Amino acid sequence: MQIVYKTVQSNKKPLELDISSSPDIVYIRRNIKEITTKDSEGNESILFEYQEAQLNKNEYAAAEDDLLIAKINGEDNSKEYEEYKTKLNTGIEFTNGHFYKPKWISIYSDIIKDFKDVLELYKLAGGDISGYLTIKTNIYDATGKVENAEEMSIKEIIELYLFLYMKKEQYFNEYKKAAAGIK
Image 1 (cartoon, rainbow, N blue to C red):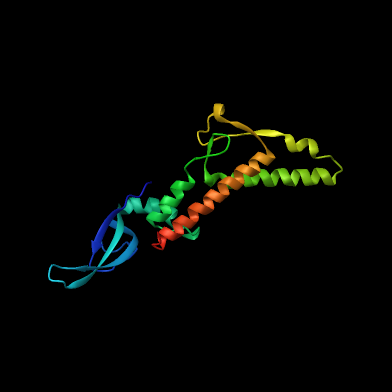
Image 2: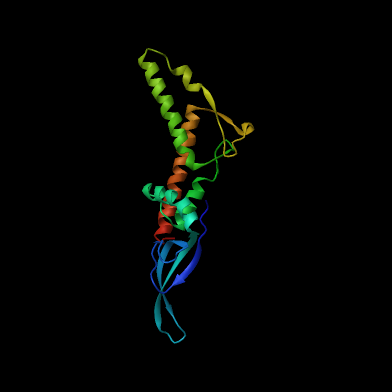
């Protein structure tokens, strides 16, 4: 379920999660910022500006587990974090002209680890691994289409992993700066 937020203001600091002020609605709030405003006479007042989603109790019950799991996994409920996750799920052009998603680095890491483990074991058993280093396997791009599968050696998979890992780290740093209000 996609949670939709809108920007609102209040003169009272809101709770991030409000399940009790309404019998039918649960309010989920994020990016709560205190702002100072001046009226036409120059008098200052404090307002709170934030993004708010309103879910009925059934919608909240359906989303509650996902929200809790996200919090346990260190994910926050900010617009900046959503943008970070979107970037991780967006294909980036690699040197072969195909697009791959940074969120897939764990898949490539598993392939690399499995390959390394098998080759080390084969070497321990007295085998010559040099011939296996040139074996290629199909790696699918962001489209997932068979015609866009690219045969890659373990070296090329490592290069793809490193490329996407650096992008993921770049995006993470951009997210942290944006969340801290640094441009």
